[in-house]
Image 1 (cartoon, rainbow, N blue to C red):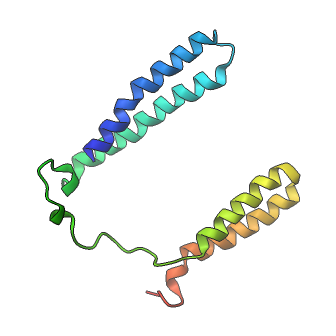
Image 2 (image 1 turned 45 degrees about the horizontal axis):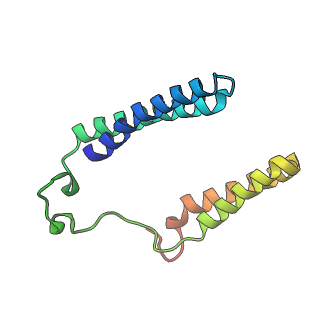
Length: 133
């Protein structure tokens, strides 16, 4: 995790510098770009600080060891869904929600209903069917 925290924390001064330079070049008349770059710097601080904090509180991973062997990372990594259609339903709901902001609130209501069904199915897919626990 240390590499990831260095990556995010190393990007922070770059984003802040680019935000200040962008604001200076545009004479601060176009604030959206400068604000986006400055907020990106702030968000990279948040992610980098979280990863640095987590790296101090967990055991080093095999990929954190510069002399680590590939075999050290062997074994079970977790439990993952072999296949699932629920992410497709959730993404379709997101598309309906976005289109609903343009067309009308009635379509957003349909998108919320589809999203509720998709998220419900995605969360509870391991409680029934072939992969039930």
